[in-house]
Length: 219
Image (cartoon, rainbow, N blue to C red; front, side, top):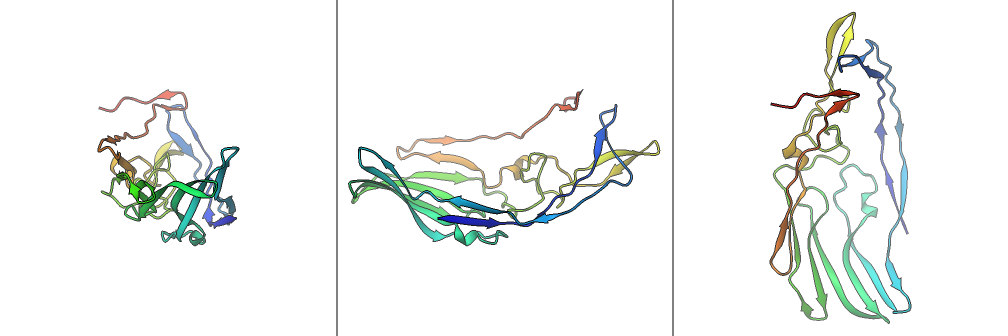
């Protein structure tokens, strides 16, 4: 059983290098090449895991097809994982219900609850940062690490280059990170069946060198 994911994209190549001042210098006529391709990803889906000789089987039960298509032409081939069932000799010992929604703009796991017959325990609950909506899946509004930054829709970063000895600013995309937008749709809290919880705090990626040049500290 396989799923096929087909996606068109462009790759743009621009030659550049760093000068002695640590600035990026590009030619006045950079060579740009664009090409498109449609790769296919065939991914086997795990239906069950069997344990021998115990006779226990873990089954992964699919539900409805995903509805967060968002530009991926065959997203409907991806089923939502609806249930995980533990069986022995054909009899169900217990199972886990998975509850989802699309509150982040993507398929989002909200609860996971263990059940056995008519008995159940309180669910694990998952909370997310909904301050900003996630961009389209193939959005180019990303930082240097490919996290969402809500900036201009281009992958070419801004550069300063030298034209006849005169510094010229190349107006590309702002690829600097944005903490607020990086955290769009991110997991912020897991609440356990006991009532306790774990809250997550994040910080931005950072860097301190360009080639062998150390960057001055901010502030």
